[in-house]
Image (cartoon, rainbow, N blue to C red; front, side, top):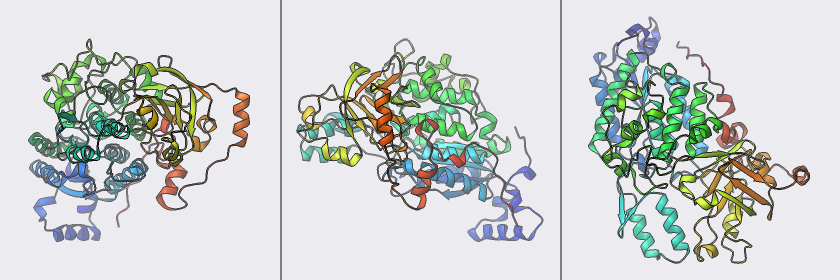
Amino acid sequence: MKKIDVKDLRSQRWYNAPAMRTFNHRSRTFQIGYSKSDFENKPVIAIVNTWSDFNQCHSHFKQRVEEVKRGVWQAGGFPIEVPAISLSEPMMKPSTMLYRNLLAMETEEVLRAHPVDGAVLMGGCDKTTPGLLMGAFSMNVPCIFAPAGPMLNARWRGHTLGSGSDNWKFWDEKRAGNITDRQWQEMEESIARSPGHCMTMGTASTMTSAAEALGVTLPGAASIPAADSNHSRMASDSGRRIVDMVWEDMRPSSFIDMKSFENAVSVIMALGGSTNAIIHLIALARRLSIPLDLDIFDRISRRIPVIANLRPSGKFLMEDFYYAGGLRALIRNMLSLLNAESLTANGHSLADNVSDADVFDADVIRTLDNPILAEGGLVVVKGTLAPNGAVLKPAAASPHLMKHRGRAVTFESRDDLAKRIDDPDLDITENDVIVLKGAGPVGAPGMPEWGALPIPKKLLKQGVRDMLRISDSRMSGTSFGACVLHVSPEAARGGPLALVEDGDVIELDVAERRLDLLVPEEELARRRALWREPPAYYSRGYGAMFANHVMSADQGCDFDFLIPAGETPEPKIY
């Protein structure tokens, strides 16, 4: 149902104003090869495409963008492809997290500076989903997200391989001497066999699923494998739908609210999703002035069971999940725990979107009374070691470590860890706690995924495969283990983590949501007086801007000058 007329389109300020500038805008559009009938009185749809040869997860986007355009044309819109920085999780160093906010800023400004009425956002590899949505939410034009989709399952020597999860698993076996160099090379050549992002429930699938639960994709879009022909149809359907969203004036702020975010949080808990989602969803919510925080995550965690049997928490992969019914089926199974009437991008409620969904494999997608884990897919802990909070994923950790007291073995940096962790003379046992400092947003810099700290080789050879590990860094959503992450305040900003010394006793109690450094306050005060802020890693450029303005993990790692959300003036056109 139309709510606006042609005269209300934002693009009309460029194309139909009674001024000399209109000549330039129209003549340069003719220059591209379009005729007047192609663009006159039509919504201009920006297709923000994060394709790059460096981003293998998005290698199919050259074809998908044409399919999105097809849908836009068919619905009476004028599609324009706009490239944006592509954040390739495997390739970019030190971390794509350093550049998520750059993509968000670029997306917002590209949409603002051009004659854009609506946007199709093409992403999927870990940070592209939140980066694109953060920018589009701040710009607040009608937008729809087209997920890249997971890659196909992989096979090696009788094993079904899951990206990330099996990298870590078999690397430990290689370090322990149980896998040869030749076998490792075979695995390298086998594990990524099609376009698409990681097929485990890593950060990519977590965030695209969160986007669907939030209501900014078409129903079922997040689960479709990238190589499936249904993915092509989803792309064209997204192009058709965005044109209607423009005429309906369906902006993010008009239908996304706290209840929408509660749905997204609940779904990622049921999926056993990535801890990274906590940072990204907080940042996304605050772009719409919605006060999502760690306490809400923990409250929802206590009532939502894990019902997706997906790696690293379970045993299946995203291709299995899709053919078992996909995200629509999982949402239908847990609809009683969601805000069912929340509106979504297709103009229908969440309940309407899943009303005809079915589960075809009850082992992959469980019911609420047959979960993988009764609660706590992700949990938030606080205490004297993490006054502002830390997170972990019990669903992918050893249960016996969820209540643990041990002696700290500390590493001051990732370089220090790499140098000493496999030293046969390192004073460490399986009951100790490995602590890494200086790996947070400022300290690393960029908060890389260093949190799945390696088990010392000498312990691996003894059969140890999990230990309690604590850091101010992040962990890949494909990783597993008893890893406490995002400790805030971080060490580089003088948080208690900076004061931990070898031999200190640390206690974790997940049931009580506690993480404590059992050192007298007087001793901590003495150490604090001696502590000095480490020198900045970057002295110039974007890296320096990041360190100077990034907020802590519990605040979403957004830039302070982008919060609070608010109206930015429209560009003047002369």
